[in-house]
Image 1 (cartoon, rainbow, N blue to C red):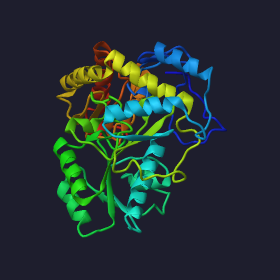
Image 2 (image 1 turned 90 degrees about the horizontal axis):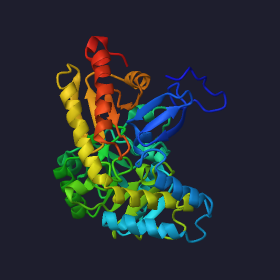
Image 3 (image 1 turned 90 degrees about the vertical axis):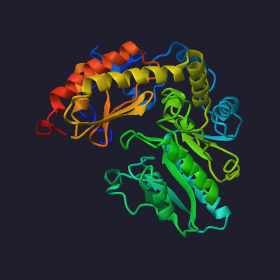
Image 4 (image 1 turned 135 degrees about the vertical axis):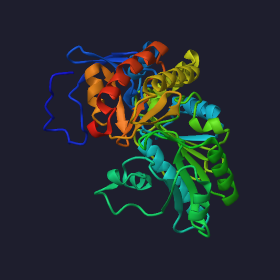
Length: 403
């Protein structure tokens, strides 16, 4: 690993960083300032869809930087129309609002739901949200999040949320019974920060039907699991349903900050001029990144690659970890995989980095793998070869496990 790096006296201490400073990357590999290479199985936390320094993306961004980076939304941005039209085509929805992050996209979704309620004469709209969910760290998205650890110290939280467990339609019916203030249901198809927990296909269909029955908005957060990561453009498409509101971000720009809210007819016209806005959202550079990302994904067949290589990676993990005493479950879809242990395994991030592999651990005991969608089967095999021996070495015995 890189020689120890001192914490900056000028940067707020908000991240538990590894002593690594990365200098450049190519494909699924990155190098630190000391020349050490790493296989990137984290992808910037599901952001670097096309890997690092993809030649076509680099050329497009260099071209755009030489023309316009930012103009503001006082003016039309032609690539907004191009990217919006593509997202409408891929999603089956109708309109798009562009912002800069997943948090902003989720915040916009919450505002849409509240205004939807107010337009119907509901003074105190309420939104159904889920245990273990993660939607962001603003006060509103933090309140929608289902993680007491990240909420601690930031109360009072925003009111207006009803929390339920995953995959239990009767729990939703019970929690909302007789409540005329409910306006929306909001969830991640596959929870990322919560531990790679999936909504079942039958549940997705049931909740879509319930929202139709009750005239609620179905709002599906695809910030981490969308943009081809599971082998379809959006993870909820495995259930054959359409949401009313769909926040996006992360992989949409392959590393350039971008967010979007895609809405169907029920929600597309809720916002009027002056109701919502953003300074940086939809800027020419981000839009070019989004347009090129989707174009290259189609050109290179990256949805099929995510499905195929993801299945290969999952099979390798199950083969090598199947007899691990502390293994609870290996789950996920495509190139969004979680390996849950029965013990905390946060130290594995450091052990893997020392071995030349970048991963993350979320929800204390879930190893999360969200590599670039260009990952090859050979690179998947390398992930297995680097990761699994370290799990066996450090986390095979509950009594010896470290957090």
